[in-house]
Length: 58
Image (cartoon, rainbow, N blue to C red; front, side, top):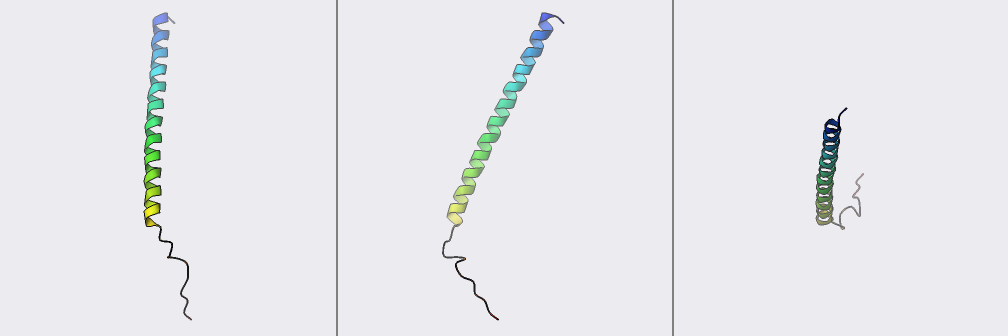
């Protein structure tokens, strides 16, 4: 194998690694935003007076 082929292969591997890291970063950002939206939704939906008692008729 010649030096040029080795250099090209190493550059391609480096590029693949950088792209993979960028994709993981984007996925992490998206998951973080979804988590924050879920927490906000849960906070706004909380109604503490509901569910405290059960009406039972026989």
